[in-house]
Amino acid sequence: MTRRDFVRMTAGAGLAAGVPGVGRTAEGVAFKTRLQKALIAGVADDATCERIAKAGFPGVELTQKEVTLEQALAGRAVAEKHGVKIHSFMGGWADLGNADAEARRRSIEDVKRLIRVTAAYGADAMLLVPCLRMGGTIPKPTQFKIAYDPATCRIESVVAGDNAPFAEYIAAHNRSTELASAAVEELIPVAIENRVTIGLENVWNSLWVMPDFAAAFVRMFKHDRVRAYLDLGNHVRYAPTETWLRTMGPLIVKLHIKDFKIDRTKKNDGDFVPIGKGDVDWVSVRKVIDEVGYSGWVTIESGGYTDAEHSALMDRFFAGRGA
Image (cartoon, rainbow, N blue to C red):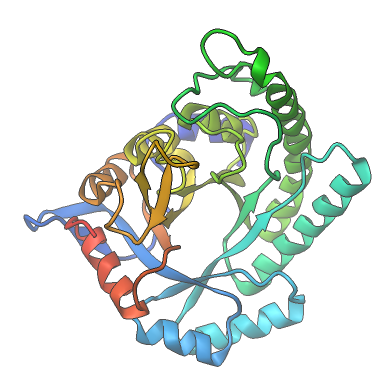
């Protein structure tokens, strides 16, 4: 697909990943979109895949980075034996925004290796956090009002009024965006060759923290091999999950699910909590997932319950009954 095709496609209806599992609302009306549930695990060995399958999860996202291509191929065979699909690989945090060219090069080459590992596992997407955490004085979540160039994602200001206290953060953010975008451009040919989509995840690194800004960064690449891996709970302190979904819409390749309880008196404006005990309205979120047309995998990234309880929770969520 060309960049022009991608722009035209994302201007229309939402993209679908095409996996089975239509949910129904509490009233019994079928959702248009199809969701399938997955757990996170380190590697695909017999014990892990048997546990996941018995809990009722058809899919898994793997996290162990120190694996060879041969080990990944073997893990794929084990997963298939148990009827478990390795749908994604968590490449995780990279250092693509490092000002040191040698450090940045090492990180780029390692991400290329992880893309090939993803393909060997038979997964169609790799989660990538392109940069480490930002330094400098950072606005509180409720202070952010970012002005930026949507073509380059270069920040002009991050709050209304005086931005002098945040000058170091703004400069570091702009440098990281420029360097990371160039690095991701270099990764695209490797992703194409291996038929892997790079899913850029929204995490707590103080980069691209608002929905429109995060979407603009993904759109900058104008390629369907660079999409958004949206975590439904990570950035509740900045904007409601429904806003993130509506803004990212057709850019989304995969979803993570977790919950967050807002408390503006706390250091991080709240805490991650077991799903259903936070401020995410899961009935509303399921409806918005349907509204934006996302069909695909939803991987649970949360604690507080057993595998079987998480499985039942996901079924309720998919059916529109909340968590």
